[in-house]
Length: 133
Image (cartoon, rainbow, N blue to C red; front, side, top):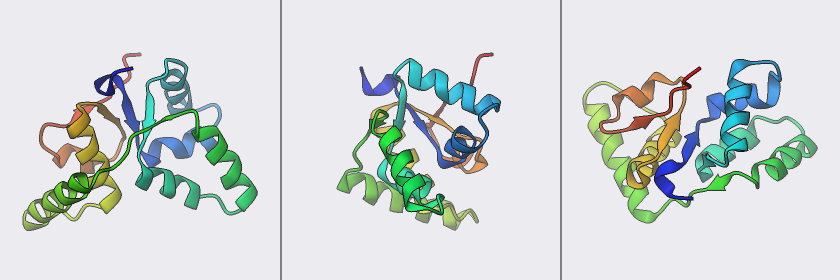
């Protein structure tokens, strides 16, 4: 599997995956996982697991997410995310650190981001995953 084939899945897409089994988003994420294209970075993994109220549920989700490609965040990624954040803040856009980091990793790896969050539209040269059906 090449990194550029992967799709980094944002927190806002994992929520319906875990909570709305009949949703279109769940079907799309299932498809990405079935095709072995789904990926996650540490900040998103932490956000997803933080969303569970009970440790047992978070442990179950963590176990399930072990099968998803995990893309490491490098020191340079953190530096670049901060630079993006400063640039966007100077333009009046304050983005969450997790979004900045995921976008930075996606740009470095030339992979896509699957999210409905409009923050990602502000990141230059970012590939976005769009479902074709």
